[in-house]
Length: 396
Image 1 (tube, rainbow, N blue to C red):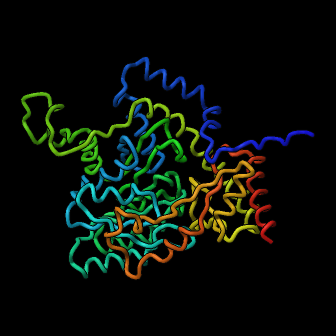
Image 2 (image 1 turned 180 degrees about the vertical axis):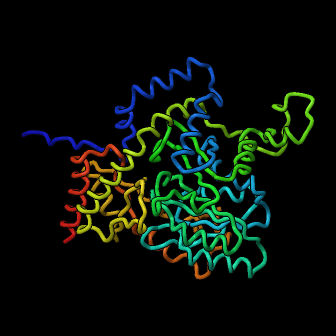
C-alpha cells in the first residue's frame, strides 16, 4: 500500500520568493556598503530618503531604526506630553498605542468602520468632544492606521482633526504605498509613518522605519531627535559654537538611525515596489472572486482607494474551524487582532470613545487572514481558495 503524499506547507508571507527574484541586486548593494565601511548614515541612507520622499509625494523623509520610533519622533517634536490626549484605534498592533505613554500622553481609543477596519471619523469626533468636555486631557494628535494595507478615510478624519485643532499622523506601517483619490495619505496628514519590518509590503532585512512630511521644520527636528538631539542647521546658525557642533546636544533625543545596509536593500526593493503593488491587487482580486461565495465577507476597500494588501483578511463566524481545516492542507492563517488593545492589561485604564468600541470588539471575533504576498503563485492561491471552499462545503 502506498504511503500518503506529504502535504507541502506554504508560507503565509513568502519572503524568500522575493529574495530569489531580487537576490543578486540586493547582494551587490549590501557588498557595496560592506566594502565602503560607511555602516551608519552612509550615502545610501540619504539616497533612500530622497527616493522615499519622491515616491510618497513628500518634501522630506526622515528614516529611523523602526516603525515604532517613527511614531515617537513627531510626537516628541511636537512636544506632546503629560496631560495630552492622542486618539488612535484599538484594532491595531500595540505600537500605535504604546508610543503616547512614552511621552507621558494618554491614548484615547476610537472605534473602526465595519467595512474597512480603519478609524471611524464619527467615533473620532465623539471621542475628541468627550475629552474636551471632561477637561482632564488636552486633545493634541490623531493617529489613523492604514490597517491591512488600505488607506483610512483621510478626507473625513482630517476634517475632524482640523476642526478640533489636532495634528494628524497617518500610521502607514501596513499601508505605505496605498493611495486615496490618487493621492498619498500625506495629502491630508501632517506626517506619514511607516515600518520596514521584513513582512511589510516594503520591508528590509531587519528593522527600519521612516517619517514622511512636507513640514521642513518638523523634519529637521526629527532629524535631530533621531541622533541624540544633535544641533540642527538652524541651531548652529543661531549660536556661536566654538567647537564641533557634533557634540552639542540641543534637546533630549534618542538613537534611532536606519542602518546603511538596510537603506541599500530598500533602494532595490523600492525600485520594484510599484509593480508589486499591482501584483498584490491582482492577487486580492482573484481571492475576492474565488472566496466571495464561501465566507461571510471578503475585504472591502474604501471608495477610490488602492490598497497594498499587507494582509488579505476575510470574515467568518467559525474562524477556528477554518484555521484548523486549512492547517491540515498545509495552508497557514493568522488572526489580527484577537484582543483589541483597550481590553489588554496595559491599556485597560485609558479612555475609549463614547458608547465603547462595539465594532472593534465584534470584528476581533470574526476576522482571519490568508496567505498574501506579491509572489503568491496562482496554483498556491488556488490551494487556499480550494481549501476554504472545501471547508464551507463540509459545513453544509
